[in-house]
Length: 208
Image (cartoon, rainbow, N blue to C red; front, side):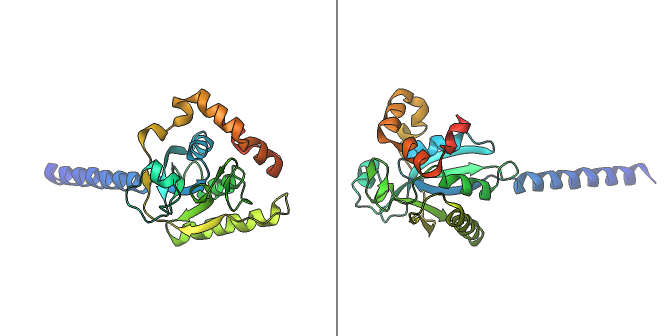
């Protein structure tokens, strides 16, 4: 084997290895999941402590107004929900696990909102971006319907995803930026008390 031939083989191996490495990195791109669970400050807080979740962004989706503001959404006239977009590493936490966890962070029996926040923007929903997510969400809902420790019907909808609009910067990670105000709001709103009354536990407490 000539030196040139050996060099060509070595170069080819490097290129192939580089290609494989790039492919592996590309296939490990973070997954996203979008849900509504009332106040997005609380939903963001509930999901950010889970291992495998890499980012949670508060925002708006499901309505008919482009680039809505918080004031517009909270008026109830845009059709948007307060939502969070959850970014996660599916090698560390699965969509199924996050879906099952979601139910125990909300009151899925309330058709009018969540806890002290009432109105269309505060209703619960899961938004699927493809048929795979739809199947996972529907399976999770069926599981909860068969095992829920209460008799009331679950009214949370499973809907096709629409454009996600990030909320204003002051809403992002509100629970860490304004921890005292957030803690008072969550307590006075009765979120954890209602969740515990429904499910027997507050699922998010194990992560905080």
